Image (tube, rainbow, N blue to C red; front, side, top):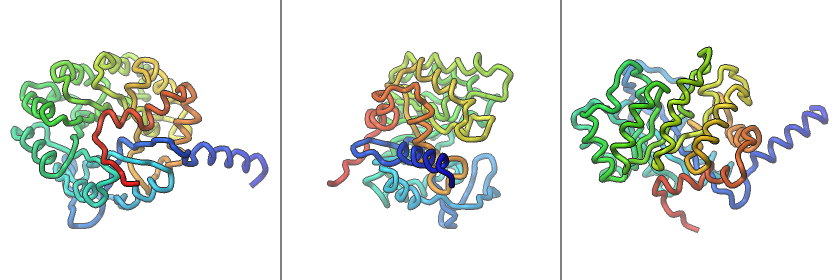
Length: 304
């Protein structure tokens, strides 16, 4: 390693090193195991889904220790389908570190009851929905979804959405009808950088900024980037536009999964926010990385 490489590596390490007193909350953490006690049953791919490596909860516990994360929000990664047992197992194995979101089949006529079951019996605080997998369907704001959202208001549940830009008006409709449901939009609203001009569709999300119960997850740049090489320069204008539209109070941050991190290891996740998203103010970076999460979820109080 030459001197220039050494200086660059040292600078990056300094950015990513845990900062005493800094609150960091990972608001999107997908964990999974290959233990047959928790069989896969992907909603679209069924039990035929094959995953090379596990990303168990223990890996995240180590990541949190190494990088100074205080809390994380566990998300069912869709591998297990509508069975949230492994997420529940992880939540209760480390009850001082996590809150949990599961998956529900939104077209199940008993979805409201299933939500109540996972919240009341397993201590979950929300659910994730993925209308992006059904781009030609419009179930998100159908009248048959109203009972589910009314139950979510009663339970003070949080809903996070993996959603395509053209589906944002459906989400805005539900946000207006059910203001008691806190909403997280995953992956920065998933702008399509393959499109010749992604901006008109992407800007549909901006209508959500009028709802104070909506937050955008300014995270996981590799999910949208077409460069596919760190630091994903093609994503920067989109993160900046979200910040300028929504402001620091309506942003959260998440990583996606613990080790193994194929796209972006944790030090680079933090460096991306601290160094390459230079448009954030220090105050708004604190909101993004942790303080906003405390306003959304009811995290456990830690000892000591």
